Structure formats: structure tokens, C-alpha cells
Length: 79
Ligand code: FES
Image 1 (cartoon, helix red, strand yellow):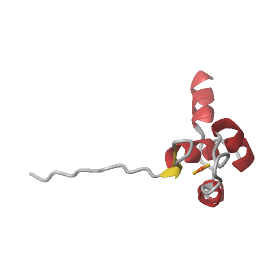
Image 2 (cartoon, helix red, strand yellow):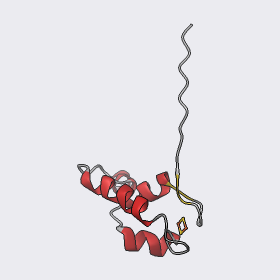
Image 3 (cartoon, rainbow, N blue to C red):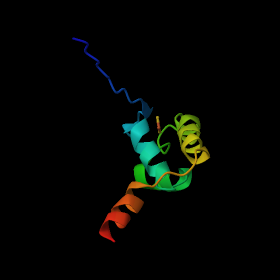
Image 4 (cartoon, helix red, strand yellow):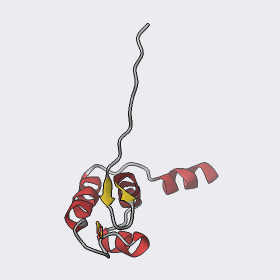
């Protein structure tokens, strides 16, 4: 028997606000930019040392071809 075990590891982007990369990535996938994500989550509003990494995560999401966001999927299911 072969067992395959996946361990999902998500990094903290902002320690001060306990924000994980998945959270930032999800918001970026909804089309939000850094300023909007900062306003919603407080990311980079305490010590600011996470700003560069947060921006990298957001840019990496926005650089990818667009996938349907969860809001679009929900809207599609409602139609
Ligand atoms: S680590 Fe994000 S504000 Fe300090």
C-alpha cells in the first residue's frame, strides 16, 4: 500500500496581525490591491516589515491569468 501524505504549510506574511499567506492570496484573487488589503486586514500597519512580502504575494497573484474568483463562482451558481 502506498500512502501519500500532503502537508499544507502556509506562511505568516504579517506576524503583527497574524495574517497568513493564504488570506492575502485569497483577497488578491478577489482583485484587491495592497491598500485595500491593508485597510481590511491591518497588514503592514504595525511594524511594516511585512510590506515587501505582502506586495510580492499580491503581485504574484495578479500576474497570473485570471481564474474565477469565489465570488464569481458563487454568482454563477446563483444564476
Ligand atoms: S509584520 Fe506586518 S505589521 Fe509587523
